[in-house]
Length: 353
Image (tube, rainbow, N blue to C red; front, side, top):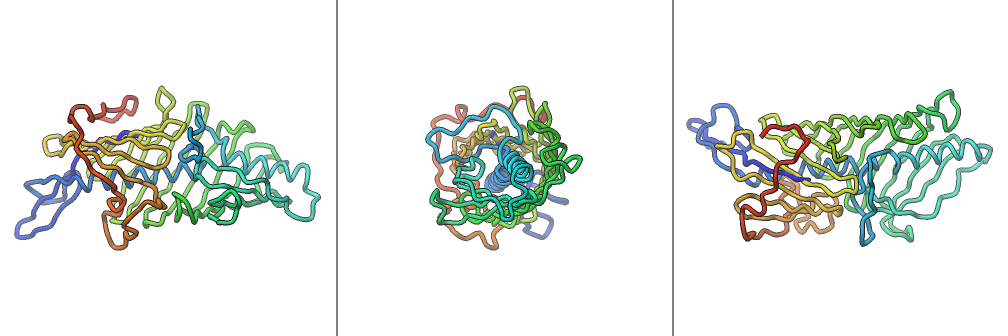
């Protein structure tokens, strides 16, 4: 993900000393000043919720315990969503006469959340994906619970089909993420459908998303709200290279892009629309484990873990603070040359500079 971040500015209203943070400040402001920390906060917050959406839906391979992350070449519902539908269809078609729920399957690793899971399916097709921190299944980490599927013609395994999912993650990188999903799958290959999602996290942030999947990829719109009252909208699309583009816009005119490869790696950009008042742009790169390296053109580099349940958060306290994402900032260092760290603007996003 690349995030050039343009600094937000503040101004003093006559007779007062209010600090206005954001692109363009607020009404009546003058003499704008730079605010690097707020730009980084916005970039981290937006990235964090974007990653959570992909992890919960199972569309993005964001975490793995393998030395080399598994490669995913295209976007589809072939992860968690296909598991929920296919196991439900299997039980209803071949084991519906069983008086008790199907036995849990052997634990497997979910690449989206980095947690192990087992699956229990009831005779009516409803079920539960149980999450665990460890492969021995001794440390529970939450669950995904889904309703009885609504199959086409009421026949198990026929599409389009719809399920409603309630989820809560209690451990791991996404600890505190919870919400609901309604999933419509149009075909048995899980290449097209619709995901409608509501999400909250442990930092009192929230997101709603409507994601449509087709042969062309993903398209949709997200709304994000952060614990300091800030918010943004996100437009989702696929570029010519097959990457997911999440183009975000804040009400004050700041904008940027998060560009995610299907394997879970991302680059970011964050931009202030008024270059004459902006601090150095920010850009970033995010690894599958949530480590986000943020650079600016002055040569500063900061490493952050953006995920809400990150166990490396030394502060352990984000209560009452507007700048919760800065609590997980780990290190800052001068890079050798400013020009060498400034990533080019992403192509295919359609966003103006």
